[in-house]
Length: 359
Image 1 (tube, helix red, strand yellow):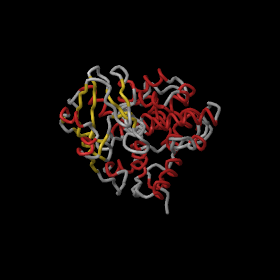
Image 2 (cartoon, one colour):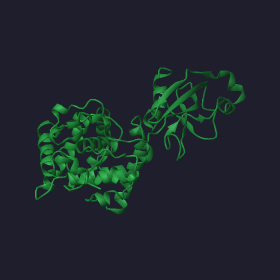
Image 3 (tube, helix red, strand yellow):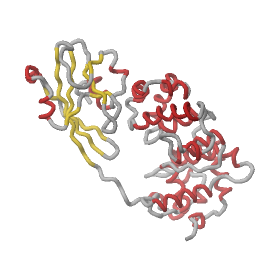
Image 4 (cartoon, helix red, strand yellow):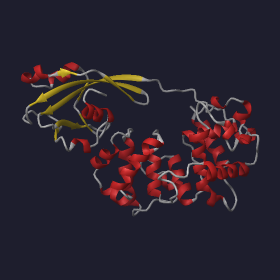
């Protein structure tokens, strides 16, 4: 089996790396708040936040998070509720839970110091191979490849790598190919941060999924897909997750003073660890949970849809206004009007409470 590198127009990986490094210095993103630092805490935080989330969204969350948790010591000592509260609205909440657990692990097992190698970083909770490599290369200059979604697109197009990435063996081959493209020689460690950032920038700003700007690409002379005029066929992945849907019924109980009844969701499950309006799997079970004298006060709100990556949630909300906190349920508690905006809430629940039925 030949290496994917053998199919590239230029068989000089050093030249490829040099072009990426030079382009990043002149045209890459150099003003993001998590750049121009070798602080692994900041790089780690940004890498986790940027997973399946746009830079424009992450900017404000990153700033608020750093203000509240300026280092790994403060983050580790915080409560999970505080972390989830600040993460609320960013989505994919397992990231926040793993972030908190990872901070505690670093304090307990590494004396508060981030490991300096990708191999050790990958052993930490919530840090996968690409994230570990990003931290190790950006902060410690380790010669190691990253392969997030953007970089996969760049590498597969440059090399004309058309093997199906739905198969693990092909993904491993792509890792090997990406490693061969890294800077080499004595200057490699000094160039790694710029190279790694350059690969991420290329995928995010030039080598786009649907409309790649091949004319502006610094490695177009190396690119098999560009030469063939079909960059959009890469990367190849045949197995796609099918979308599904689920209906959920929500009980929005609120007393006259503005307090809302919220229940902390169990782990695992939908919105695990977050505070939420009580969830039910049917309208009947929701109504059964409401005391008989109050059933007549229930009013239904318009159904709204919350779109997840591979699932549509249809949320059926029933509003129950009560005079005071004398009404209680088996699980959960009344949370004051001034307090519930600070707790960890799923994005659609926060929208519902903040905007009423205008979601």
